[in-house]
Length: 172
Image 1 (tube, rainbow, N blue to C red):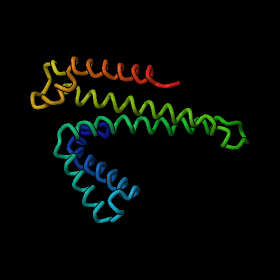
Image 2: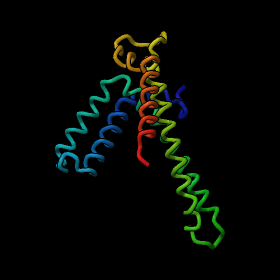
Image 3: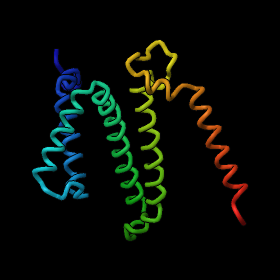
Image 4: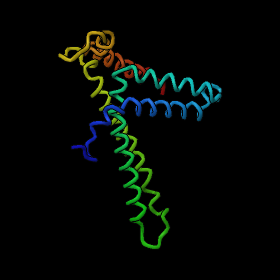
């Protein structure tokens, strides 16, 4: 029997929702930044094409569906914490007394969003970044070569050497 708690049918609507999400975000960014000249028709076409491209890629659909749920949860948490801070002010006091605590909340939200981004990338594209795992897709050979532990270690050592050399040769 179908109930209101049965969310299995949303699986069929997910591609449409992901298309709408990508389309709206890209269109809004293009309209706000006027990156393509601010022409509405051009922004609409570019957003439409990028939304359709996002639907074609299975990994993009999986990534967007994973990350969107976590960002919605983070957004709801920010709203609830802001409400607690606003209502936690002294009765009869101005709501702006809670404002000094908001920059701390925003920095925490920023770092949590970075953690969510990295965790989502690791969840969806994990086999790509682990070249020797059983789940690794052989078609991603270029990225697997780049993220090979030997290559990453060599790049890290070279970066550290670059920083040390720049610090030692810097004139005081």
